[in-house]
Image (cartoon, rainbow, N blue to C red; front, side, top):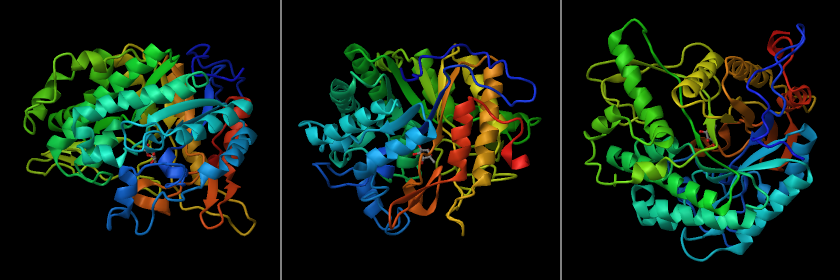
Length: 479
Ligand code: FCB
């Protein structure tokens, strides 16, 4: 039997001998994550239609010049070798996403069975190696045809998404137990429609809020469809952040943090888990939109029962009140608020490294949202690493990052958070959206010219963590 995210034993993190490091609960799920557009390549193969990321990556000035997902890690052809690598590392679970335009090239209408066949083969390969698949239905690659009809700013896309979920479930539901609807709707809505740093590259706050709603509605409709089909576990992955006032003694900073928390976290968590948008955020959105998209009954639809919440975590957010400041490009509605630049150590993304913020975030979600079971569906770090003279990749900084965040997870477990597993981002270096191939998040190195995979030291370290279901007595970086 393979481990599944339902097989948690207890929330107590337990029983390690004094000299050993933290141990995780029995059945804690160890995995790695990827996403279709970031690794598959084969962009025009077997009937796949174009997605908004194909369009975006070809639009001058949007993505590092010349970088597209056309070939990526060529995982579409190399999936069997990649699964063998996962097995060698001892992964219990693998989180992959399905490319909607492979399944329905136009987003609605005819089903492309050759697209489904690929996920069939991948799933069987995983199961044959004892690896439990966790499927994400939407990791940002919207079929271009749907974008041409309004994308996530219109209700029809939410309805189409539920139909696509039904199709995918019909083919894979007998083998896939855990179904995640969306990955990080915050990014799809705000990066895609406010700052335009991500596809489809729109810059309109009203469109961003409409997208938030239709993404959530799409989740609700798909979650119901999956449940009706008999899905064992239904989830959604968010990227909630721990928001701190830059000066905790400043009332204005505390209020700024509350608003940013609302626009980033509660706008998703409240309708999903409480069945209502937060009142303060509804009022705030009225500065930008008449909310015509919000229909009676929508919030109940969004509030479909969830078995587990996926949490992607990379860095905390610090804000302060700054009268007159324009809104941050990625965060519509944050006029008068300044986002602090990272302090202290950062990764190659210039993201602040602060594992304690993850503990605090998990404890907060646990407390405010009825102890919802959670999975870390992504956590990891980019560093500009590559093979050294001895052919190895000695990524001690990544090991330190992962070690610190796993200790943070363990602390949350010790305080009673129902955390069921951890997926490192990412299994291998891949197409990092607007950054193209310039940022490397993998625990496996990819040479994009030869497609050679080199297992980094962090992957060997992770293999050891999985083997002992825990961490060493001290962080490697300190040894
Ligand atoms: C997350 C995305 C994932 C990857 C990491 C670094 O926001 O879900 O695809 O790009 O960031």
